[in-house]
Length: 485
Ligand SMILES: Cc1cc2nc3c(=O)[nH]c(=O)nc-3n(C[C@H](O)[C@H](O)[C@H](O)COP(=O)(O)OP(=O)(O)OC[C@H]3O[C@@H](n4cnc5c(N)ncnc54)[C@H](O)[C@@H]3O)c2cc1C
Image 1 (tube, rainbow, N blue to C red):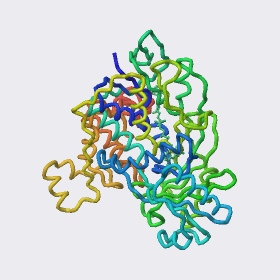
Image 2 (image 1 turned 30 degrees about the vertical axis):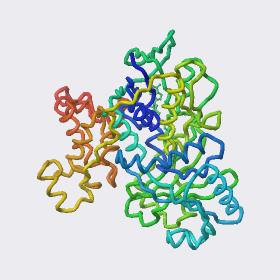
Image 3 (image 1 turned 180 degrees about the horizontal axis):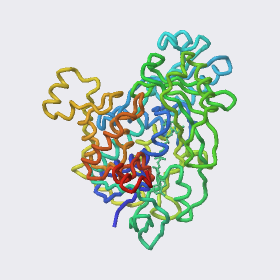
Image 4 (image 1 turned 135 degrees about the horizontal axis):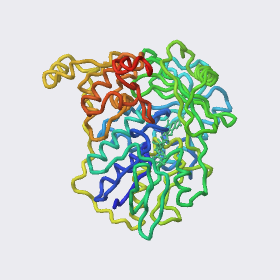
């Protein structure tokens, strides 16, 4: 029997799995999709917030300021991609300037660091493409950007290294409480565990209701984005928020950790938790709003649009703690700033388990580090030459847009988590993230996955949920008279 079963492989579940791998516990994480970080964790702004925005006294305020401070060390240990860029909240009028004062005061109470209010000219000196209409800005020097799905992968890989098991394609459909443990009913059979941690994101209300804890609901609140080409990175290397006005937070313009520019999101309640479709109406609205901060935003430079859904709780804050059902812990309603807060929430969950009386013996073999990828893009000629001499696969470029080699893809496939989809490779290596969006490299990535894992080409998915790219060989289809072709 497991000591702990974690439901959900987003950034929260993976952060908890890594934290618990510090102890001598038998832990498994179950995830209904084909990989970690495939839902809200893969589609958000990727900002490590300063911690000034969430209301003082709320869990969001407490954990975001704490989580922010943990990122530099986490990056040093796990190499997932993080840059401390700083952020501005820009004001265009006196009403918004008052908002900046309020945010400064709130942030100071939360323990946010590096806050100051600067003039519009000072802000433009730092970021020359900012609009001339900006009158003042709240600078937060400790804000940054990260790659959310690479963080989830890094946390999970480190947890695997330290003994945590991961079960993908495993959906929990029911939870039964016996005298001293739980039985999780899944599509892959029953799983027994003494402690259950519900980190099911948008579905945390449904999982909680499985043990009768139905005192909150999660409503999806959508955010759509556009991603601009890397040649637009001149616009800003600082995260640009707009000051909130009339209850609206405005649209942000931000560099990504990989030097694209991201514009968005909107904030609209929707009916379906899994609805991540974008619409031209919302995209136009976002671009228009973004141009208020930086008017150089150019529609022709959009390389893709995407949407993510916030897990907005009826409790209006994070819900973290043991429920009335002993041994069942909810980590629910983790909307923004959940990415920022994840490392601090994970430590808190370990503390909750200690308070619950779980024997938490430190594992002397725990290794907090994860090997960085050898990225050929950006390597010097001599570095590349040495690497290719060691392993010729680094000399074969598979993704031309992002300059990703076969060596990087092979490395990604052999890091302890099962790889069954083209997007799993894309999230780890960036193969397929460039201008052609995988048009050239996807078939070659499939061949490498097939060769390295033993899966047939027909078994490889685009992004889980039966999204197969090939059904059968052309020859087989033709032999059947082209009936299924
Ligand atoms: C538009 C938008 C912008 C945001 N911007 C930021 C930001 O800039 N900075 C920041 O700090 N935060 C931001 N956030 C918030 C952040 O993205 C989330 O707080 C975080 O990703 C939540 O992670 P999670 O692990 O709780 O959820 P998820 O990533 O959704 O993971 C939950 C997992 O549980 C799995 N699951 C669900 N039900 C079951 C089941 N029954 N059985 C098995 N598995 C199950 C799902 O498949 C999923 O993989 C933003 C969110 C959105 C939507």
